[in-house]
Image (cartoon, rainbow, N blue to C red; front, top):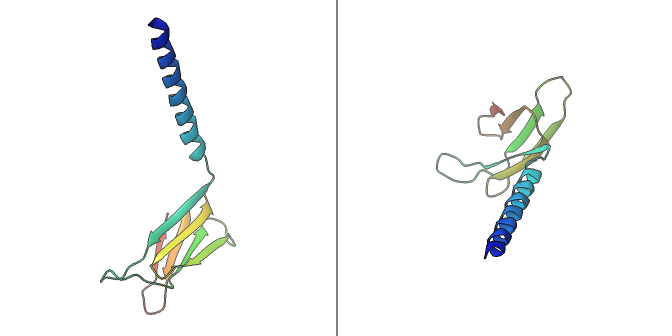
Length: 99
């Protein structure tokens, strides 16, 4: 009986340690993802919005740009850091946020 209890404890401990190390490994990525869905005031998707992310800091920093899809979705993968993100499309007011 005592051996059975110890064996269960050992297996449970190994499982906890495995899943803990697995989740930590996935969170050590040096990239960040900016994503979302763009909609107008009526809830309709906005296609063709130019979403650009510029690293804050020295001039000439890299720019990552994508266009929103037909369903209004966009996704940017950038190195972790502080960015000025701009959303622009003709007939709409451009918006800029720091993230």
